[in-house]
Length: 369
Image 1 (cartoon, rainbow, N blue to C red):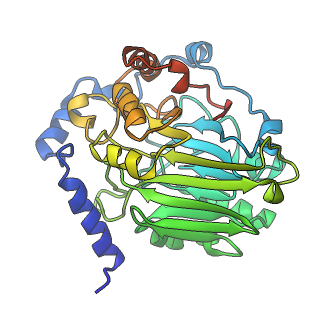
Image 2 (cartoon, rainbow, N blue to C red; image 1 turned 180 degrees about the vertical axis):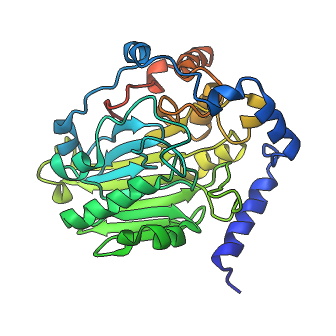
């Protein structure tokens, strides 16, 4: 007998709970976290330097729209919008990950963690003014810093306005959320597809094809405080193969055929299954790996990698190059906001690896992999 979606999600929750690297937070641990003296920095957002100081040490880079309008098909081109939001271009497809353009990552916009670094562009610029567009939106899970209502709503509206179809790919259980809250994601030629771990969604446009596979990650879901683990969470493997015969006339390519693989991790703690992911789905040409929101370690270890774990994860999943995500935008935990960048470099050197293969960028910068 086939399982329904709720049963499939429950099976994955039980699977994660069986991992020796995961522990369900107890009430005692949560209370200890809330009573931590440094936690007030997060609650009151008091651990953020002045904007003038941040502008000096971590300026926002101006988006190079010419690069985004004419991406190379033989490379993975990635532009960091901030936090876990990446604009990834590969194989002639424009992909936006965990889009959050809002001022706050919260259920409301008058309270909650506020951006200390603004996005380098708006959705209107990306989808309309600069003539770039978004083909696919990947949402890894339903936490507010990854699934932002205002952003996905505007993306769906812009796609209808521009008559450019948008495909939302989400973990099991989130399709119903989109049906309830973002009806435009189902209108016109827009689509929402939900997938399980190890399940692949294939999207075609003419003779051009992209495959997106749900990848297990050690995390959890919760939207309203009463729905913990009722929807799935996942990373995504994205694979494209392009040839000159299907290349966009505005793009450039050096070779006749280019096959590329990309891993978007979403959120995860380090777990042994990452080695299995590398063996089964790797190697990856590029992986977006989280490096922030990791302190205090006794509470965050199960759900968020720190820079040292991120370096180990890069090796485990067999990524040729990695891009650090999930930092530099919101104050979510108690470590200093620039510490992830500093510790990542130190961790790469300590591991004997080339720091340039896993190097932070500025928000708004575009890199090739």
